[in-house]
Length: 167
Image (cartoon, rainbow, N blue to C red; front, side):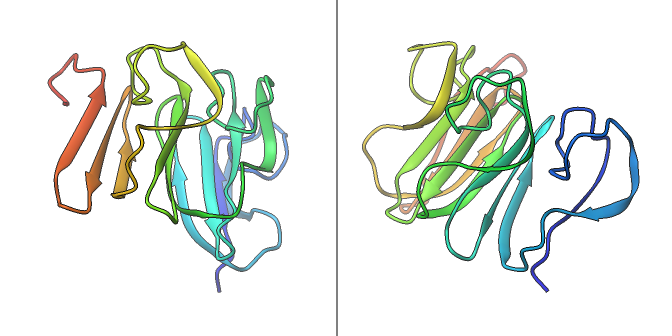
């Protein structure tokens, strides 16, 4: 029916149901919306996109992985990130990346290994930053401290930590 449900540990609000620091053995509904189309979970944060193209994230925000520009430790309920033109999102360990409807890719959060694709401009990015100038990205996946993405020509691009050959 398009509703969104989460369960498990909620010590940092990663379930999006408010903070109660309790383990949820049964699924808990996130809000009341019934139009969610994309959801992805990271280490301790979650992001989702409803049909209107808005992007919502919640949970640990220590490195800015929520992307709302707030330097808060955590967000216990979904908070909106940017505009309503997101197609897909991926949550890594401490960073997040998403592709907009124009094919551009944006990343934010921890950048200690260059996993944002922005070079080493900063350790943390608190708001989405565009990766390059391309508008030909089709898929992105954020890993532990790295990111990989596909372009329309089917070429695969990866960046970030390569400590175990993941790139």
